[in-house]
Length: 521
Image 1 (cartoon, rainbow, N blue to C red):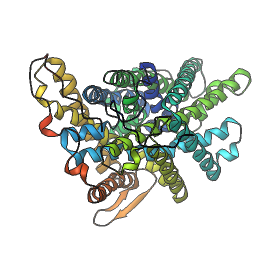
Image 2: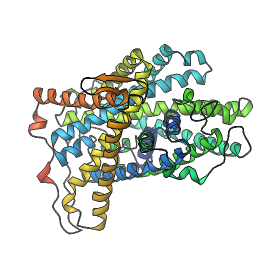
Image 3: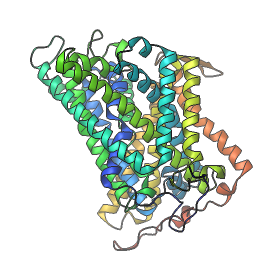
């Protein structure tokens, strides 16, 4: 194996150019959202909060995601940098804001890796019928660590290997979810005990009992869409890097809407929203509703048994695929930050033969393992609340991207109707929505000591919900690290190598030039 070393090339940062096409980019975006895993981990929580309105909540969460996807598309068109929010927020608001945008990506991905590993570890044993091991914290942790190491190795070996694996896994995943949905609807209308018929009232958001339940539901639903931006994070390894990644992001978001609307509706029709048995509001199944529903929908004999096992395999591979595609954007964000001298230069190293980030990839895998093992050792309740807190990190950096797009293009918004809407109004609306959800969740819903599984007593403030404390503390750690980096190696903060503020485009005719792309490192 070749020795890793730092690469510099005139056409980029040293990553493999043109390795991905549109289909591979869409596959990576969808796989990163991990539809089967996301539904398994989140659908029960959404139903517990909003009841029968779960389908409309999953649909409404699509709106801010689509608006931010357009922000990604427009910013990527002028600056296809794999640092995405880090670089774009720096262009719009300056190096410190950009640094925090990069940190938002990193910390959200590290936190979610713990749950991905937990799901993958448990489903590995379920697949082979080792239910005792699946319920063992020790052995699921060991299996989860092995999955993280395996997916880190695949990301290290090369982007083509990663993309090829994602294409195969995604096709199987979508096929199984479609089969599950159709079968669940057929059984719901054949009189299965506990099932209910579809109703238009499920799609009325005004039937949600309270604003806090609505907000918590939307934040949970935003989590299941999260991940499509990975298609943009690999932009420097994509053919036609200024157009393909942005198109892939928008397409991925639209496909996720179809998948989630179909599966959430059919699952609710089959299982109902009861708090016992297979009911989606059963607290015992809230962390993983699909493992229970798979057996209930397909049966336990003959072909049904085989399909139930394939469904378990689908959720397992979904979690494993998302583990891989979570490592990809985090490694590339850290890599870009290092190239721009915002973090230590070791993270800018690229493998000579594989042309993948070396330090950044392995650091992501190892830090994720450390975080996962630490939380598992502390408490399963803390682990669960840390997963809920991911919504704050997602809302933070997605919203920041929307604001950055609007502010960066503010001087050309009168150039055409398209510029006004896609560079200005839509990204701004997406940013404002996510800012509202962030603030309302962090300081009201999640701050309630009765929300989640843990609570903490803070000086002056008093007793606060653990979800809010974990989410805000994780972001605050970034401020501390930024100050340390500023003191140790402050070149990024004193003279960032991307155009900032005054370099934003001036208003001009519709045919005028787009903003110039940032220098490549």
